[in-house]
Length: 166
Image (cartoon, rainbow, N blue to C red):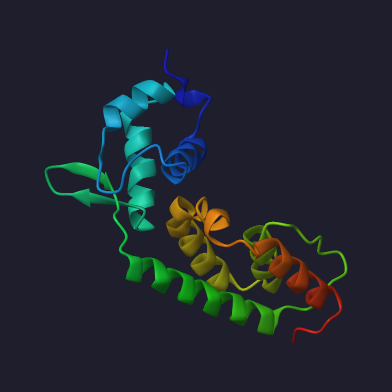
């Protein structure tokens, strides 16, 4: 019996996004929907729907006659994603009303997501979710590349708490 009645679309979508972000597939690699469905013990339709949603977020691509493939990102595309993400954070900070109930997190991406969420701006939230989905696959390397991240995060957290960021 398939677990599709236990594991819904959202769980499949999250599981697929997580497996892609964890490096279980190489950029450009073909995604075997039947094998994924069997591995997850769900229907191929459920996997296909989740992959179609990921294709809408440009995390995977659907190639005519070839199925789904994990997207390759060039260095310039990754840099563009970071620039756009920075722009979204800037907009969120402009609209953000400081609240003492905002619990700061050591992970800057979680903190930024909280700030964007606090704006209650549906457009910013949608863009942030899109960017987060696209960027998840290479964020696991960030900590290896940026030695000073914890101190930068601490400084940002203190500035936010002190109301120094307008």
